[in-house]
Image 1 (cartoon, rainbow, N blue to C red):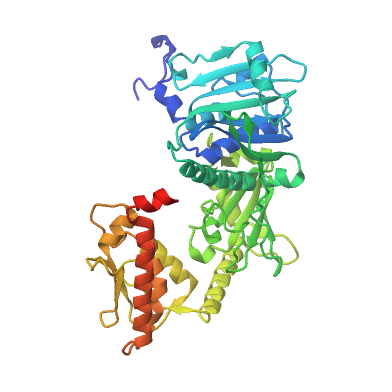
Image 2: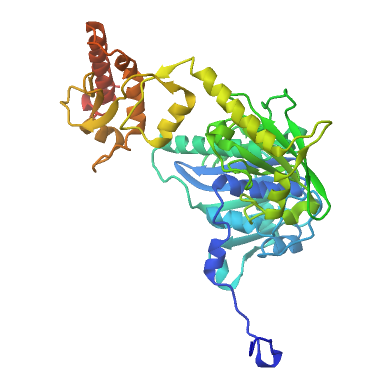
Length: 513
């Protein structure tokens, strides 16, 4: 093809600076919890034995978030490298860092600016500041050593003769309220999610006692921190079955002549434990591959690395993989270290893997065992409870969960609908039409909606009323006076509760309290 060969004489060169949008895109897959985990990686790499996640609060405002550690600290050259995009140091074999983007990507994904103060033992303190404008000329703020030293000395509850403080200022996802109760609720919800995420991600380090991670809140006005909450280890494989040759190891022979071992686990049905039900989801939703790197959990289930699609029949299975240094090229990590991509070679090798031991079996047998266990658990559950099937009103996700837990009774299904009812009725049960009507005006007040409702709305209230009333619909003949009186009683008491929660407050009553 004419002109296809490259002629160097036709080319000159110019410098092309990154567009600001490229900086904004870095870290876009981070959540608050994954961003904090990225900074804890740095603390562990710095040999920290104590890490503190600290909310900085003044009144009802969250001013920022600090990540404090007593690690080795940074020199002036080290902190400059830490603030440079893509400046990749020489990582040791056990280091959790990977791309040279962690500090910047994690911090700017969650805050409009961040500051870092650090010092090594017997060395001068150093401080830097970066905000969203860094993409304009890649400049950062430099704090004089004396001021940086004062910041480190001012940290409450931690001995920082050496160590680092990273402070996020102007959090992007933070509550703005004057209500102390709302602030407490927001902070408590975030504390729970942070403790769980870090407890799962670093459970091996926590179990070994290599590091202690705690979370607290510092009150600026009172100049003191609340008692810290420790992060406990949550091993997602702790409650797996240890029988019938499980957990079972499979040998994966890779194309380059190396090999690795994967560990297949199976869990008992109907297991309800914090090590199985992760991140506020049923444990079955966290099926799949659990990838570890340097003892740190990278990926917690939700996919089978291309071996299978996640489905309820495989919900009792999890596979553990430890990514060794010589296998890095088979599994690619994104900068946030939250979404590994498995190469076709690795997936193909896993698919053809065989179990270790005198009678090796293929990985296919593992998936067959999971499906069999699911079928057996369904058979057992069918004898326990049977509900009348809801037809219209409950979303597919709710219906799927109901159907997954039991079989429906052999009765005509019932509908749940929003309709206009008198103010004296929250609901009206119709045996003949097999329908539960719910007062739409009351629903509007509960959910704070003025628009039109669809059948997919109000799932919590519909499900609540469904469980209260579904047993009545198992009776095909005319309802007895006792059943009808029970429904009237439910209506009356629920309406009284509604009035307590949603009616306008009584000024005289409030003034007397």
